[in-house]
Length: 193
Image 1 (tube, rainbow, N blue to C red):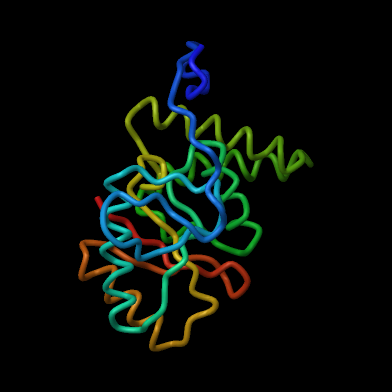
Image 2 (cartoon, rainbow, N blue to C red; image 1 turned 45 degrees about the vertical axis):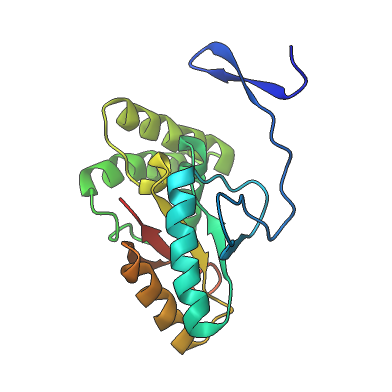
């Protein structure tokens, strides 16, 4: 196989895809022009269209605050989404901010069953991910993260005025922002589609 290709499994088939080396912390893929955000870690995945939205939002935020926004999460698979939802439940979220309440309730039922049965986090997250995968197969997505349409931006290092500027930057660039998490894991969730 060519040296610049990695193989992955997709639906039981092995497919080749271009090799991409991990990016150093604090860098993002550059599509064109100046980069106006940084990534918290090199595992964050952003499709080109989401990069464009984040770059525009970041430019607006930089223009008003002089700060660079840090993206802590973007596109997720079902396992990553289930793990994020598990953590939010542990942190005290009741899921009321999910707009698709029936879908949330199905996923939360797997969470509650795992907790009642004394299952580990890994077991419970796997059960939640199975529900998310089933929903996705039926065309339901509990989060825009699952379809590459949302980012989470760190806010715990921003002043109140900078947080307001971040919300304004999201809205000015077509995003729908709302806060998620608690004081330990707070971030601004921004949907773009």
